[in-house]
Amino acid sequence: MTARVFFYVQHLLGIGHLRRAAVLARALAAGGFDVLLVSGGAPVPLDIGRARRHQLPPVRARDQGLRELSRLDGTPLDEAFRASRTRELLGLLAAEAPQVVITEQFPFGRTQLRFELVPLIEAAQAMRPRPLIVSSVRDVVRRSVSPERVAETIETFAAFDAAMIHADPGLVSFDRSFAGWGQVKSRAVYTGYVAEADLAPGPREDAGKGEVIVSVGGGATGAPLLQAALAARKKSPLADRTWRLLVGANLPPAERGLLNGGEGIVIEPARADFTTLLRNATLSVSQAGYNTVVETLCCADRAVLVPFGTARETEQTDRARALAERGMVAVVPPDALSAESLAVAIERTLAGPSIRSFPACNARGAAATVDWLSQRLA
Figure: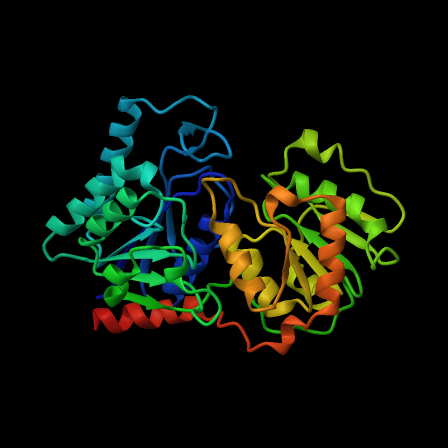
């Protein structure tokens, strides 16, 4: 019998969580699993291969602080909405009767969704036969959580059989950001990073050759970096190069309208050949989201990372700092971003070693996830 996988994912601001879950769902379906990807965020076109998809009534973060949830129109969630969404989620679980239940980030994140995720895990535990219950988590979690929240995470994780950490511990180890590592490591496995794109070198193309590629992922929080890059060009050692700014689909139109190009500057939407641009570019300047960093480590020559971060949201900053400590990239902290600081960081990374001089990043996380789950079920 084909093993059924119930895969829950919730994106709140950007779409990185959903994109990574889609890669895993696609790989699992190609590997022989019957996968239902249950998405709780705003609907986004996705390639999930032979997997199936169910869209819950969508919610999002009300703002960049990520503390409160709302419907897509900004309406706060009330108890009736929460109860209705929880019933729908539990009904799906019962109808699927899966052999594997995967929660993306939870319980190491997405704690705003405890109202539906705790009942989901309790219902999975009560099923007979009981499914394998697994957390799918990134290399870095929010370090700013309180000791009480860490203890709550460890307590909730007691119901899980394992955590798949989609990371390369030789680059960024999970214990850097999760203080309770000692209590969970016996049930944790590193899979390697999950790459959205095919990172194998393709036919030789000249797109982006010699350029500076500035990217902001989906773009929801990317306006400050794009503005700083435009101002930094003339101050940097690469003022004579073409600077290509990829704005991302979620950059607010008002902020897109403030970006003024000119000679030597290209401003355009994010491109499907992003990894080709990275391979050919002299330099990548980007935020430090998971997907972008994986592609940068596997494809770019040199890079400056400008992480999105707040006092509460430390994930991108911690990821960037870990790579900078190894000398692989230069970093501009989010609270220090300016044209001048970005130009200095560009000069610093050009004087340092190429990313390609370091051992290759393990980006086989999707295939390793399929193998590991197959072995556990066997």
